[in-house]
Image (tube, rainbow, N blue to C red):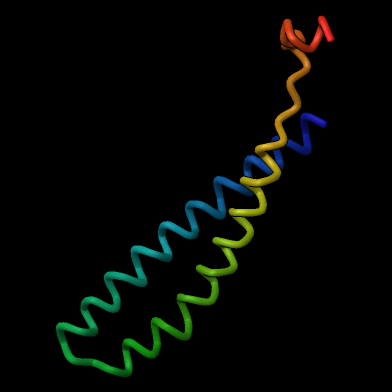
Length: 84
């Protein structure tokens, strides 16, 4: 179980890094294209960078969701749960 959690953590970190790097490239590329008036560059960044960014964001979101199901074996049950 620990290996699965570690693999999900690695997947989360890698996709988050890819998403952030892609976002920086996308925003800076479009800003430069707007400044230079290059409409073809805008289309290029929209067609090539945006799709991998969306995929990375989706995988990152699913991995983050799976990480929210953290199994806590070392914690005791709360006092209210023991008395019920």
